[in-house]
Image (cartoon, rainbow over all chains, first blue to last red; front, side):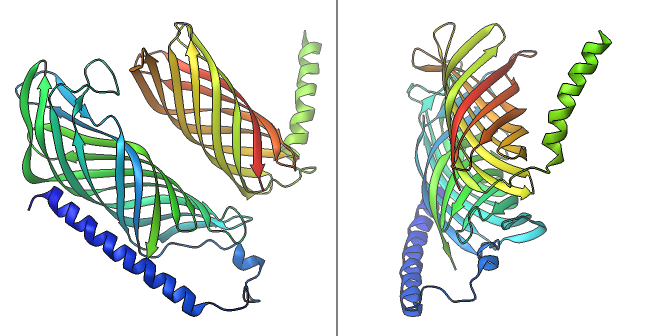
Length: 249
Length: 171
């Protein structure tokens, strides 16, 4: 089983688990629901407290432009193949947020913290950049594959934005190891070469996430770079925006 | 000559003292904001004009001080009739005096030049700038923002832009 197949299987399992967790959470909420609106102890001070995320997994949809870049050993030029932008699933496992330093704000707080995020994705790039910096052309080349990245992430988080509403802004940068598999063909100066490898290789994974967290929903602006280690100088870059739902567990 | 300079210094000193004393300031409030306005930009000898749109979230971090992460994008037309679009993800630090504010901002940007429907050039990097404006208690306001020294691929060539926005904030 190659990495893409493994990721797809993982996605199915993750979605199934997510749906079970969602139904389970809904059942617990219903069972624990009180006829009264709010406990009297939930005062202004409680509404202004910053909340940290527990362990969670995040499922959503992003619109990303993924670009595979490669410098073939036998060619002087490099090749960049993109998907010209496409919907892409967001699948992340997140550890509990930990505080490194915190400040109290007039409403809520700001923290510098860290957590660990695991992310999985597949890609299928088939438009090579020829005379445009962003938009590729179909010249018969194609690289596809997937990756699984794990990144300890340093982040800044502020909020809540309004009393009693879980609205936070969070900016994070993470770097860590990844498993990468990507292979196909690319044109170097008019000559088509095989690039990448069907074997899974170790890679360096970096992710920058700019997000607004609104209750369990996350609005993302995201950038990810995967740098496979090997003889070819190869990178996979993905930039875009998306929306995702966070399930705690 | 010295008298003129002295007069200008007094004229600057009085509003600056009022602004930074904070004694008369009404407290700014947290809230999400939307920005809609115009932009004028220059890059090397090429100028462009267009529309600018943004959103932010304002967090009060201390009395009379706020921090606003924001996203902004523009659609411009340059002197060669090309389409320019510049996307910003930034954060602004503001000092408030009543309804008025001045501040600085830092941002990551990506400027694209699109000609005949094709992206011809992309330039991105970290940059900074200045911001000033006001926001009334009913949510409406106006803001001017200078985006300075945005990097390009050409060494020594930088893009500078001025945006003027009508704003609305949900407190």
